[in-house]
Image 1 (tube, chains in turn purple, red):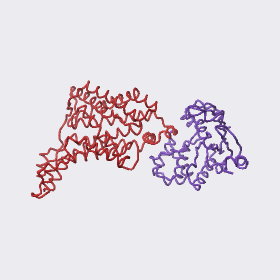
Image 2 (cartoon, rainbow over the protein chains, first blue to last red):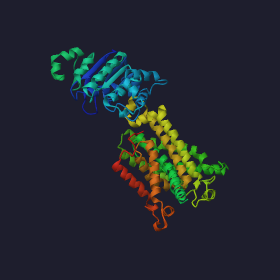
Image 3 (cartoon, rainbow over the protein chains, first blue to last red):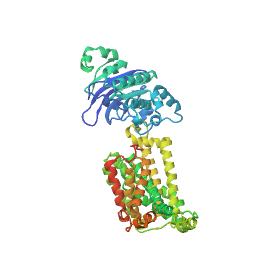
Image 4 (tube, rainbow over the protein chains, first blue to last red):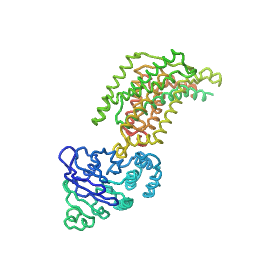
Length: 233
Length: 336
């Protein structure tokens, strides 16, 4: 497996939020982590990034154990993350946002910038505006582009469609499909389970901090029990 | 003629002094705002950091003078500035490592850091008074005036003179150069942008690989440079007195808040807003009206809105009004 996590256990200091969780994702694959509120989806993602202080378990990138790595070093080694909220620099221009995404890249970043402008045409138009002045959907695109600036191998998204309209949601999912084509491993946490599974290759459903179901997007969408319990009938 | 006289009168007594004072406040306020933006607390030790910086500059100026080194018409203190800057950077880093770092790592409340900065303020204040004493020190040398009132009168034939002290011009020019360099740094360089990014969204800056340690170090360096320049300019223009810097803390904080806390450009303008209001309101306009109004309407009183004794009340009033009506500052909310 290209990127995988095993036996993730941890929380915020009190009781464990997640227990013995595991996830796997290949390059060029979209994998969704789904589940009811409070199932530990975001916590699991934080554990994989190394920003959850009280967590144990193994995380592998290209077969290498990156457990001991600090979050910054994980980013350097090719993992990028888009948080659910506060995921852009509102008081920097769109272009500056992208430049900050490429902070760790030494040398010329114009190629990366142009690639992002091709991927997200709208942010090319708005590149000199302050990111805080953009609409919700545009902000989300800036957030994705910022995370992609380092040319990551693994992209983690925490609820990329939270709080946007259905039209914008489709647009964002379309962008995520385009990102997948760049041979990036995409791992996302989602609330809009049905729509997320539509574009996902595989999915994991967490219940109270443990892996409950897993399978291809198609399988999860068509399983009666899962439909009833998690996809709203 | 009367109109010209009245304009010169206001220029001489309000515009020129307010531009000078405003420049000094602007430099101070930018320093306070940078600390707030990056380290997220109001640093009450800033006034005394300025006093410390100026003291080092004075001591080194004296040393240079004893060697017979001078800058001719310019004050010798300008050569001593780099030494003052280095010493101030060192003491800032010392206090950061010895004091502020502990509370930062504990993620203490901003209000605790404010109280901590009060402690640092007392220490700095004591150091300065032990070394150089609490009294007035004049360290200005070089030529005193660029334009003397009498010369101006002879030159123009007007009743009113316009005097420009060399310190006033030096203050203004130095401020413009310093601020231009600073804004260039913050807006155009990668490191400057990363500083703004860190100030705007700390968590995302970490996720982008920006090293907070470097940003904090850089902030103290910039702030020390600003404190040394602002303190020295103020000392050259008025005279050096440790307590005067502590007193200036109120107008500096007012300027910071007027400009929007964390917004360096706002702090720059805020300095001038405070200076012009303070000097404009404490000036006695009697002579001005005598020039402009017909004889019957001439005022008997001084037409001074507020006594100069209350000049700090003006900063305080502006502070309160801004906090009530525009708590994010008078400019659009763009934080560094």
